Image 1 (cartoon, rainbow, N blue to C red):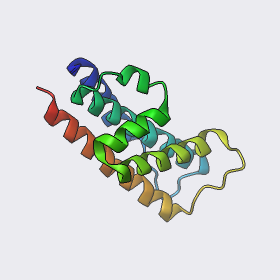
Image 2 (spheres, rainbow, N blue to C red; image 1 turned 90 degrees about the horizontal axis):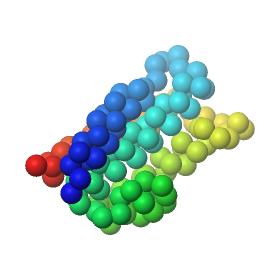
Image 3 (cartoon, rainbow, N blue to C red; image 1 turned 135 degrees about the vertical axis):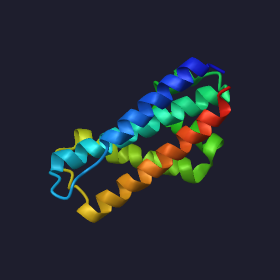
Length: 131
């Protein structure tokens, strides 16, 4: 286990998820940014979890999001892996697709709330594994 790396990723996850918020009058760009920040918060939470689990190839997984998602299928279950893939797609659309239509506001709020809940769950789970 690389507890220093785990703690670093978990710290980053907690900081990023706090920036993944939108207000009532959020612009398209604030929503896009929130989806991107939420995904990367989850990404770092997963990295911290995998380091805490002692997974040997985490540094390789960090470079390939698909492989990281597949490893989370094994670690947290397929529903969580699917959730990560969905968040990844929101992030890709938000960051790269100019023609992408942002979902309705209430849907964005719910998606971000769910991302926050999942992020804190992964962080808390990982922290329990670190001595």
